Image (cartoon, rainbow, N blue to C red; front, top):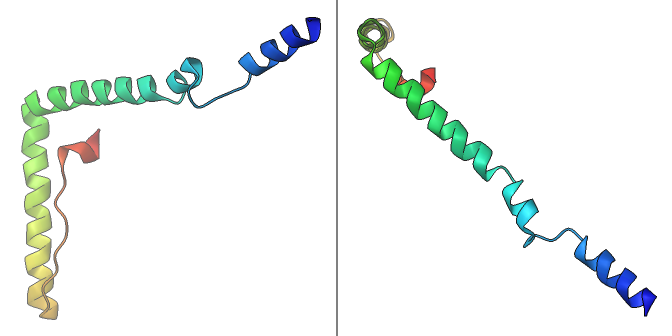
Amino acid sequence: MNSYILIGEMMSDKSSYMNRKSILSEGFFDKFFKKLKDRKKAKILQKDKSFQKQFKKLNANVKDLESIYSDIYGTKLELSRFKLSDFI
């Protein structure tokens, strides 16, 4: 009878993908809180007028670079614009 209890205890300690502790430790809450923190940073940057001004200038400079490149080399260059998420 004692051996049955030992086997049962060993099986309960076995790591399983359905174990609550392992599900929570896979990083769900870490990812959730990181996204929440990133949203707070994004709101702060969206309200910052000096950042927004420089952000618009940066994308305008990328557009100017594309036009200068096409004037010099005769081929169209398409660069991606910066997004707010690039700075968070």
